[in-house]
Amino acid sequence: MRRLSIEDLDGWERRLDSGVKWVPYVALGVSLVLAILTDAFLPGPPIALTVVLTLVAAAWIFFWVNLHPAWSERRVLMGIYFVVLLGLIAALIACSPVFGFFAFAGYLNAVYALRGRMVVFGVVTTGALSSLSQIGGFPTLGSLPGVASYLVVAVFNIAIAGALSLLAWVTTEQAERRKRMIGQLNETNTKLETAMAENAGLHAQLLTQAREAGVLDERARMAGEIHDTIAQGLAGIITQLEAADQVEDQPADRRRHLDTAAGLARESLSEARRSVRNLQPEQLEGATLPEALAGVVQRWSDLHGLAAEITTTGTVRPMHPEIEGTLVRTAQEALTNVAKHAGASRVGLTLSYMEDQVTLDVRDDGVGFEPAETVASGDGGFGLKAMRQRLQRIAGLLEVESEPGGGTAISASVPAIPAGSVA
Image (cartoon, rainbow, N blue to C red; front, top):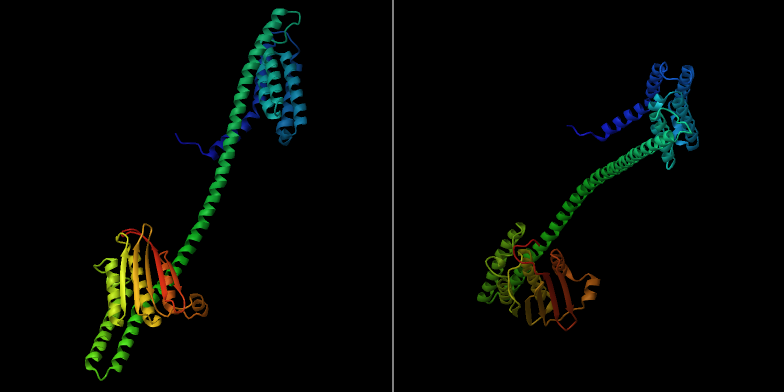
């Protein structure tokens, strides 16, 4: 069986409400026909009086209910309407007990016309009048059995009518509550649909912004890669070529500098190609991070003729490739800065594995500088900025400690994200 929708239920409710309004007229007509048919057998008031009262009752209901439905919300007017209707029901039952069929209309009109506790009054009085029809009319006041019979029937009718009215009231309240809940759900669904449409627009905007941010981040990454590879390699090549010019009268030394420059050129070209493909630094291929850093330190020491050493502390374990690559690039940039600016005689690197982070410290005994003044004047060069940006991309931190004549210490700390995890 097909489930009824809310629209179907509303349609049935409207049809029932419309049909209920015509029940009193049907009950009046049936009662009048029965009264006319039984008039020849039962003594009572003239049939003409019964017909007149029937027409008056029909006109009374039609005037108040059908012609003026808006009056149903006016309590005083509805109270007058219902009291007069009870009087007409009592008069018709006095004419003929068969008008007990019409007395049923009192229950319907009690719910229609009355509100609150007055509905109880309407149900009780209607039940009392219906009981009169069931015992054959008004009992003789002096007849104790007749009065007792009436009271028993009246109590029974009032109890049944009260229970049915209470059930109807509960059912109506539940139906109204469901309607309100459905209305609230529909309103909520409408708001959710609107919010989802707005979220879809915001999502599209965020995707666009993320794409633009990704382009800018990639540009920054490429700038850092170029600086870490090509720029450093070119700087080393220039240094070696200048040194070769200074020893033109010493063929062996000159050849050594030229060979070193050629080696740097090949290494820089290889690194540039790898940077374009966003691969790891060449030093990390087939080597652990401490081994890769040891190789970087050794090549730098051989190139510049300065004493440099690296120490590893903690438990060595594989880190995410981006983490290890960033530390290698940071070491290369820090050593390049030492060669360019520090004038140092000794350099020391310390790689420390801790529980939640990995740190790389680079110290030298060079001339040092004032970090605050360097940053304020903008003379810090691209090196420190590149290191800081590279570390920030993986939630890392760069700290610089230095003072004129006291050397420099650079500390890079990154999260200890193990290999195989998403950084």
